[in-house]
Length: 99
Image (cartoon, rainbow, N blue to C red; front, side, top):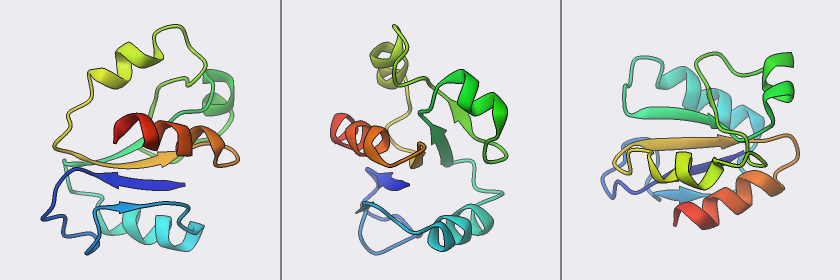
């Protein structure tokens, strides 16, 4: 998983961009931000992967989907994103795109 925020005042961590965070850290972020409307879990796996199992409250934008770039561009850049995929390579690529 990857953590991304454009907010230089992000209360979640001192650094606004973290890469390759561990599951325990991701769990803490999700748990501590359940009522934070600015915290978004972005699952970039395929719809099939997402429908099999996903983090509660996550939104899904298929990295391999034809409209991925368009959907990514629509995201609110002031929000905090926790990027999730199966192995880390898709979320790492998305982090690069979001930067």
